Image (cartoon, rainbow, N blue to C red; front, side, top):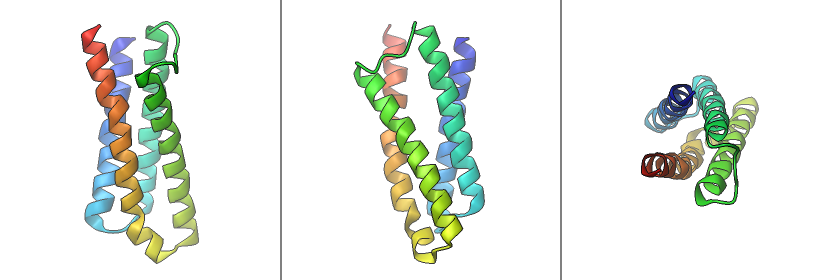
Length: 122
């Protein structure tokens, strides 16, 4: 199960990074970015659930648990807000959305890195 969990988490990193950085480079939120955000969210959620099973249950009473839950909630908010921005077709919001994307991506990296560090350490 570890290989599936690790693959899912890594795919979350790949998809979410592609979505965030291509949006920044292209200078405007597009529908395909939204699709990639949701794919990253699904991969992260699956990977987190699998890792939780491997660890004998998910605990939020740790740095990794708290930041991981925060990251998933932020990814969900980010994807939903991107959906709202695209539906409203607000050009200014579409052009500035990358600022939120970068913040969420940077926060998401915290549990990704801490998971790798704590996973290797134990």
